[in-house]
Each structure stands twice: as C-alpha cells, then as structure tokens.
Image (spheres, rainbow, N blue to C red):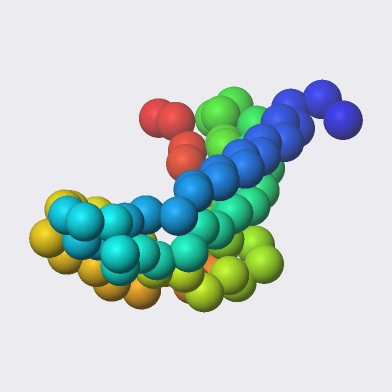
Amino acid sequence: MQGLTLTGNLTSVSRQYLSADNTLSVPGYTLVDLGARYKTQLGERPLTWRLSVNNLTNKTYWAKSHYTSLGLGAPRTVMLSAMMGF
C-alpha cells in the first residue's frame, strides 16, 4: 500500500543491580513497540497519520532511570496523531 510505513522496536534490558555490592537487583524485561505511518493528500494538502503502541504486551517492569531512583515502567500506551501541511 503506497504511503504506508510500518515500524517496530524490541527492547531487552538485563537484570539491573541496585546496590554497590550487587546483592539487590530488579529482573530484566523485554518490551515490544509497534507503529504505522500513512501519508496521503487531503485536497492539495499533505496529510500524515501516525499510530503507535508502546509496550504492546502491557509488561509490568521496574524502570531504573537514574542510579538512585526506581519506578514502575510505563504501561501499554496508544498514541494517534495527524499532521497536515499548509
């Protein structure tokens, strides 16, 4: 289908250690993200639709964003957008 682009991303993170002596850790996880982009015309104006699903399997995981903090990772997130050129 002309104008359609499919995207995908697989992220795998191994066990992460939380303590200096490596006795406290959080388990690893794997995330799947999928998306699609469709470019078309509306009249004479270019129109792009985007749909993405992050964490497709709704995996629960611990995210370590900094060396001193720990939080729950983002749940399944669906995003839809449209962009029109002028």
